[in-house]
Image 1 (tube, rainbow, N blue to C red):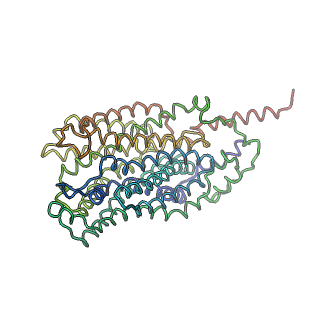
Image 2: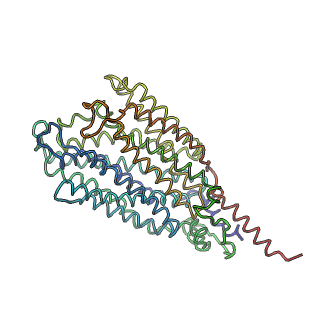
Image 3: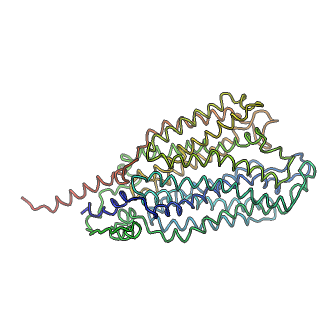
Length: 533
C-alpha cells in the first residue's frame, strides 16, 4: 500500500519537462527577482540620501550618511531577512507552502511601497521610518528563500530538479540588473529635467529638491513585479509532497498533480499507509544522527560564502574610481552621481553576476552540486588571493584592467558555484515535513554571514591612514588584509562542503531516507496482518 500511496511522487519524479514547470519557475522566480531588487537597490541611493539629509554647507565634500546610519539603512533589511527565513521556514512546514507563500509576497509589496513613503520632520525621523519598513520588507523577503526553493524542488522531476531550482535563484541576477537599469532611467529623466551645478560650484544648488523623489521612486517600483505575480501564486496548488507526506492526503495530492501534469494519477489511499515511521523532530537524536552533519554543512557553507559574497560590494568603489567610471563626488551634482553609480553597477551585473547564475542552470544536473560548489569556492579563493597578494600592483596606474577582470571572476565563480548551490541543496536533502525549516535555518546562517560581510568588513577594510579613510570610520586592517580574510573564508567553505551530500539524479525521498522508513512501515504492517502459525 505504501508503494501505491507514493505513485503520485513517482509520477512527479519521472514526469517530462512541461509548460507548467516553466510557469512555476517564473512564478517562484519573480519573487526572487523582487528580493534581489529590493535588497540591492538601496546601495544605489545611499549616496543620494547622504547628500539630501546630511548636507553640511561648510564641508568641501557632499553630505554622507554617518557610519551608524549607513550601517542601519543597508543592514536592517538583512536582519529582517534572517528573521523571516527562520519564521516562515518553520511556518511553511506547519501550515503548508501555498498558504504562507501569499503572506510573504503581500508583505514585500506593502513594505516596498511604504519604504518609498518614509516620512519625518528631521533626517533622523526619515531614516528611522525607512529602516522600520525595510526591516519588515526583509522579513517578507526572508520567507521567500525557503518557500521558493522548497516549492520548486517538490514540483520538479529528479532529472532536471537542480536546473529548475537554480533557474528560480538565477532571477536574482536579473533583479540586481533591473535595479541598476531602473536607477539609470529614473536619474536620467530627472537629470534632463533638472539641470544642477556640481557640488564644487554651488554646494546647496547641486542637490535640487526634486532629487528626493528619485530614491523613493526606485524603492517603490520594487513592489510591481511581486504584485503582478500574486494572483498566479494563489492559483498554484499545494505541492504533492506536502499534501501526501505531511498532510497525509495522497488522494488530494494525486488530484492536484493530475491537473498540473495533465496525466491521470489514480491512488487508492490506505489510511494505515499514511502513518510514517519517519516522525522524528528537528531537535531529536534521530535527526542529529541522520541529518545533523548535513545541516551543519549547509549552514556553515552558506554562512562563509555570504561573508565573502556580500563584502565584495565593498570593493566596488575601488574599481569604480580605479577605471574612472565615477569621478570625485564634489565634481558632480546629486542626480549625476546616482546615474554614474547605477551605470557602473549595472555593467558589473551584466558582465559578472548574471552569466554565473545561468552557467549553474546549464551544468548543475550534468556535473552535480558538489563539484560546482567545490570548484566555486576554490576559484574564489584563488582570485581573492590573486587580488590580495599583489594588491599594490593592481592599484597602480596602468594595471587597473587586470584588477577588474580578477574581480569579475570572483563574482562569476560565486554564482557559478556556492552562491547557487547553497540555495539548492538544502531544498533536496531533508525530510518533507522539515524541509522548509531546515532550508530557513541554512539561509538564516547565510544572512548572518551577509551581516558580518557587509558591516564587519565595512569597518575592517578602512585604511590605517586617516587621509585614505572614509569620514567617521575608525582605523581598520585595510583592503589588502581584508581580502586575505575573505580568501580564508572561501577556503573554509571548501572544507565544509565535504559535509554536504550529492543529490544529483536522486529523488527527494531517497535523499531524506523517507523511502527506507516507508518500506519498514509497510513490512511491519504486513507482518502484523500475517496469521499466526
